[in-house]
Amino acid sequence: MSDKSKVIFGNIMPESVYKKAVKTKEKNIKKFGDDTKADYPIRISNNQYIGESLGVQNIEVLPEGTIPSNTLPFDSQNGIIVGNIRMGFGHYRISMAMASCAKHLGYTPYWMDLNSYPHTTCTKVISAQNELYSLGSRLSKNPIFNKLVWEPVNYEGFRALSYNAADQKNAELMAPVYKNVPKDIPVIGTHVWPAQAAVHAGMKYVVNAIPDNWPMALHFAEGAVHTIQCRNAYMGYRILNGMNKKQICKPMPQDDLVYTGHYIDHELVSNIEKDCEARTERRKNKKPMRFLLTIGGAGAQKEIFAAIIQYLLPRIANKEAVLYVNVGDYKQVWEDLKDEIPAMKKHIHEHLGDFEETENFAKEALDPENEVSGIHGFWHENIFEAVYCTNLLMRSCDVLVTKPSELAFYPVPKLFIKRVGKHEMWGAIHSAEVGDGTLECRDIPHTIQMLDQFLKTPLLDEMCECIIQNKKAGLYDGAYKAVELAMGMKQKSIIPEKEKKLI
Image (cartoon, rainbow, N blue to C red; front, top):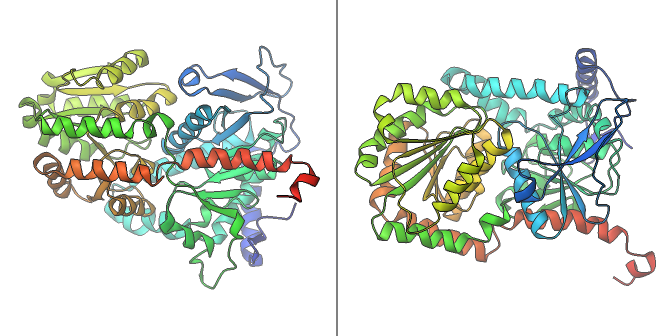
């Protein structure tokens, strides 16, 4: 295998860039160890949180010397691995969409979280990076840090080919977790590291599902097929636009880049018409408008949420609005909001830690005869439940209030609050272009203005109409297509040579 830090899609890296990448790897080895020669046994087990709803089984990478017990067999014919990490909630959410569509298409999705094996160098490296990213997200609330450090790093720093060179060296340290995974099971990486590590480990069929539509070399896993959600990002990725400063880059091979559309769960896509009709009916009948506020993994939007709650309180009291607030696995955020806004307490209904109760609420809220009122707070300690809670609530909400991250692509009317990282800006731009979301509201006054647009104008109806049209155009079919692409790579490879010549 060629050294992927020296040459990236035919673009030769300067010696200084390569040496820096090597030094980065050596630094991580010194800090976290080198388990390249390790032989980690694996175990397949049912996922107790989303196993039933999404058909997911876990791939556990066990410490050396462990004898796997009660392991399930690999589905060698229909199995597909969803490789992911927990870095915020976004990559988990995309993974759930892939698993949902894989299950619907008749495949067996395997969940492989590279940030869940604490005895491995792989997880140690990812956890350290995750902590740095979370710290940066929190510090980005400081306007000086945000302007001088955070936005430039997220926008131009991650864009550079030199960044990918360093990442590829670090990914070599992640490859050992795949050692005992059958090499002919397709892998969809919902973050670049699981995709890079899979390629380095010799996995044969790898799809790298790129989450962002701002083209960045950060997302390259050469050797995998790259999928994108938005056509406006296609050419930027294809020609490696601006990824080596002003130099013209050699382009990606055409077969390495595929437009799929948005990565969305089957449960959401299949119910788009029904859910949009329910939204417009509620507005027509002057029912309270349901706003879903979701705080991401970094928990950086609490102040904006507090302002939204304060503004909507009189409307909640007058049965003009309802709030769902999902704080994920950040219970302290919910406690802080209650302390900061004492007036909200009389309207509160808490759904804390009992996922079955949350599922029942979400199901009952879909009933048009069910009157929902007040402020509903949701918290779940487990990461699967914390993330999937938003997916469950999305169907019965009218407006999703979120930063323009991975949720920018979901088929629900959206109000975008201030981004966390400049690359997220393009999520709001794309959503506004396809008509299912607002512009990015970069301060609280503009956020309040947009709340009024939803409450006082037919904006909600307009977005629902666009969502239905977008579905007809296949805009939300990306997860189905990514799964079909990954499985198709395997199926194509096993066609007898004699038949291949006839195709």
